[in-house]
Length: 566
Ligand code: C2E
Ligand code: CA
Ligand code: CA
Image (tube, rainbow, N blue to C red; front, top):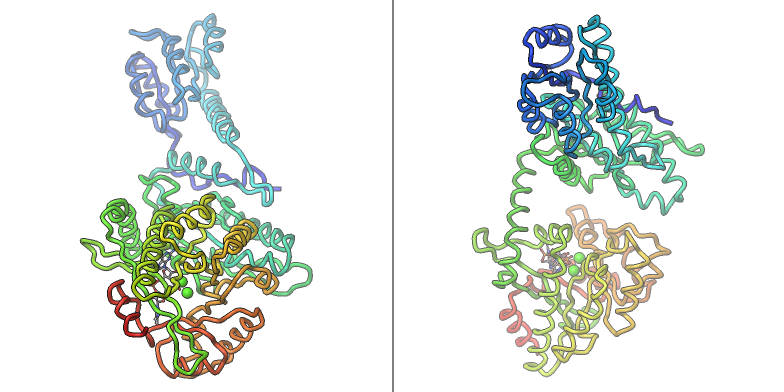
């Protein structure tokens, strides 16, 4: 188990601050001379002055030395007033008095200790002060101590409080906020079992403690597979990463199976909430997501700009929705099993025509809205738009062209999603099979059971489910075979990789074979050339979407696209 001492923030450059409340200048001077080398001293000569200082500076004070004989307010009343205010009631107070009779009353009012007058030897004064401050800080910490049961590290809530407290005492120490994530931890659990995953986390926790022993600072496990470090600024992040990445092999396995993604917000701005500072570290870590090897991301100006843009987009969203700045584009899908490819359906893809920023691609705002709860409103807008167009085209051409819409993981966690979708198709007098639902494979990586249940329910109602980005989510085969799906849409990357300069279509072929074994049609997207289309056809792919047939088109152009083909 880890001892309390190991968590202590070591480099203690700033001094604790002590308020001396004493009306006689000579006594002030004596105390200052006694403790001034070890503490920063603030002086008050009256009760009123003392209360003013406590009010405005309590966050930086560690102790109050309070004389009872003050010219304006009696010291005991000053003490009483301090104890009444929740924000600083916990501040330890040592009473200075020549009157031994006042001791009991001061104690009742919550004074922690006494220093008699005339003053004893300096070392006695210093010892009492040190003990009082230590006791009070330990108590503050213990009040909130909560540990993560698996690793024995602090949990996130406590960690944040502790970090705030450290800032108070080390406000001038440049400090780094660091996050470490294990890449695709869930697949580790899937493949080697939960107890293996737990072992890896415990091992990581030990490494992290060793790291903060060297750098100073504190560490916690914030979520399943992520750890936070708050430490004095260091330069050698690679050393931190390397130390974290060696994990003791489990049960005879010789090498570590973990890959770590680390994000650093160096010299963190202390005027920001501690959580914001770690959000920035997380942004930095996310910027190196997808790199297979261990990787370090640094929060820099580029990320700062991305953050500013995100803030603006979030702020602009309500107006954008009400002013219909979002426009839905349609991209056709063709059945290539026959000699002459046939238009079979389309995918609805949203764009944002921003009045100041111009056309914004969904790749920028969709992930942002997924993280911030706005995606539901946007998706419902897109689903309604798509349904209304299926209706209009069905009326004009006498035959429905089904449209698939993208359904985010967050949408599927909405308890009302089934009702909402039913409402939208009913409003437009459509059959349930005329609005197809594209759900990305990675939607199933968390709360899989809940998501699968919802998708099954939709499927039973007649909605057709296409699995989007198939092959990118690293789902296990056993899980894939139990999923409720009607079509598999290959991740575009397979097509890209297969048709690079040095052509290698083996993986693409294998993926198509896999899809065939699930006995559902295969869709390839991102198909840009005739050569690609013909090769896919030969491999047994059923449906194709991509620039070869058409880019996504605004509704009016797409309507003409249909008109030319019926
Ligand atoms: P996705 O669902 O995988 O959509 C396919 C993306 O590939 C689209 O990008 C499309 O424009 C692009 N694409 C199509 N054909 C080709 C091609 O031949 N070559 C290349 N290089 N690209 C092609 P887009 O429209 O930028 O959308 C990006 C992603 O944003 C989508 O990926 C989807 O995940 C998300 N998205 C778009 N609209 C919505 C929406 O209304 N709701 C939700 N939840 N997500 C959406
Ligand atoms: Ca899609
Ligand atoms: Ca896709």
